[in-house]
Image (cartoon, rainbow, N blue to C red; front, side, top):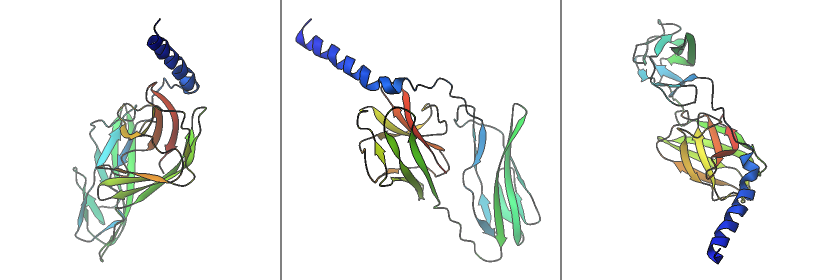
Length: 230
């Protein structure tokens, strides 16, 4: 065996022991409960104004899938909504907009309660989210984060209490709707900051599009940690 062959063999032995701690945390079952989500909820509408709602059905592995949705309103005398999800404010008051989908005989529903006003309504479309990340392996991963919608983009910020093990050269960050899989997830990028406050600007992503942050050993396709987005 040549010296170079020996070094390559030695390298892979070291890599095996580095990653053996997270290999044991591998997930086989990627099933999640299907759900439907309103993409653009609002606070309210001024009388005679409208709002074009949209919704996404997420299947049993947390990926978007085409489905026939049904829009409805709790009080059509206050606000109406058509088959395309366009709500029209009729009279002052409060009502709930619902969207439903029937999957395998089960009805899934999401709701948005809104106020109809005679005055202009300021909708907080640049809303926020937050959460806490936690390790699912033997490696250090902890801290809190916030998300802020900004004109169609998403700003993901980690606070000063963030800490991650630097012993994982293949550590990547994803946004996903399935806590057990990165199939169909959005790859944010390789983790290059392992302690302290930092942020990511993620283009063309809305606050309601994803439910989890996932940390993944990319070379071994294994989850290291997760954070639920509130």
